[in-house]
Image (tube, rainbow, N blue to C red; front, side, top):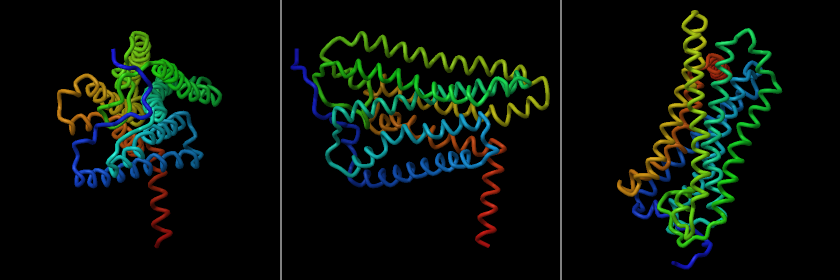
Length: 310
């Protein structure tokens, strides 16, 4: 058996085949993408915080989703941008574990928040008379706390188990650290890690099943009235688009982990960064264009600014 130890640093080999010219182009595009991501999510967060009309549970959950869209990519983009301009692509052992924790707690929190938003829409459409008695301020705060605490607890357990492994290598064939890449470097059995990981996957797959189940009931209820259909189209369609966006992006990452070694490096890199790029970029745009209150507030701000400039 190879000598087991804890490496001081991990080497990230995802950028090894890129030329200097490609790195400059990728740096510019990635920096622009990160700035746009920060701007659209930040603008929506500020709009919801400052506009009293947007203090309903649905918009508070949306604010939580946008905040999460800033939290996760922050563990990837600064390091990635630095690596694009550097010839040495390494990350410390502690930094690697921290990156895994943030990125995957971000991904699982997305599913938790989307499940809360589905619950909120279910109550609004299927039990409209009881909505304000069910979605009280206290319950909204408790649900928001759980949507962040539970994913972090799950990832903390995963990271504790990973940190106890003895490793026989330090090369990660990816643009960033992920738990499966670290597990593949282990010199010892990873049965417990696999069992816990499987439980976490099943737990969040149950979130998707719950969302789909709740939407079956919402559709049945919405078709009964014109008001129900209007409410469903305005608030539920954006939610479904965001769920599709997050789920497809996560499937890309799972495909990368399973089939990554059989495709070219550029395709593997593209598959690896989907869930760190598309959901944070598209989710606030989808909601900003579809939710009436957000759209009206945005247009009023634009009109006010134009008048001020005039």
